[in-house]
Amino acid sequence: MLAIFSLRLALGMLGSLFLLSPSQMHPRFFRTHFLTVLGLCMLTCILVWPTTVFLPAIIAVGFAFLGAIAWYFERSPLGWILIMAAGGAVFVALRQGETLLASMPIIDPRAEIARAFGASDGPRWPFTPLWGRIIDDLSAAALLGFSMTAMLVGHSYLISPGLSIRPLMLQLGAFFVALLLRLIVAGVALWFWTADHSLTNLNDEVVLWLPVRWLIGIAGPAFFGFLAYRTAKIRSTQSATGILYVVVILVFLGELNALLLQKITGLPL
Image (tube, rainbow, N blue to C red):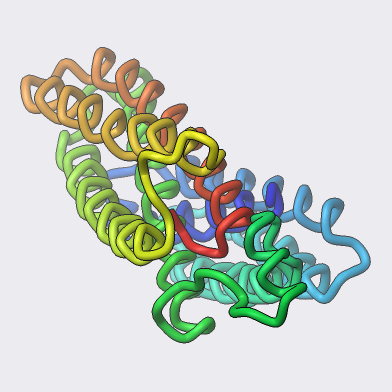
């Protein structure tokens, strides 16, 4: 699960760069992003060796290294190509990782009992497995990536006080769109899950984890994200960055919780 989380974060951080302009952000910002992606992909390589995820992950490491070098130069056209190349490699690694994760048995005891008696395999994501996982991956990657990048953009104002507020506002706007998409994905999954399960059954461990996932991973980021947005509008960028720290922590905890629930139920709750 940690490998999936790392790859989603790496993919989201790479995608968020397309909303930033080198004319406004210093090349070191892009370089730092590539180095962070390199570290996340290296962690993935260590965690997944020697599975099929290793090859695309190590290719992503190579592209991230080249990207970090390319962004030593201002307005590097090769830098944008390497963003797409690294993103493609990370996406392939993520798909391989999701395939491995899906092949593992769901640990819901009732689903295991049902299998033993020849009943259905338990709840599943309503879309086809491929599209369901892609939607889940992209929505999670977007939320992780834009929250992290917004916080890092906020840091840029400490060393570049004259930086336009536009990059931060763009990242915050994209963050809210990603949060809405994540809410829809999780909401649809929860709707299908409740068709066979009761939310009042406190003997079900999923029911106990669901409020934590939704409060920490959805409601919390929405509330503090709004505070960060209002603070950024008055150009109190240091305060906005501090609030975005909280947003990032809540998003990380929420997405890790979501992966745990997906392991138990087979659905991206």
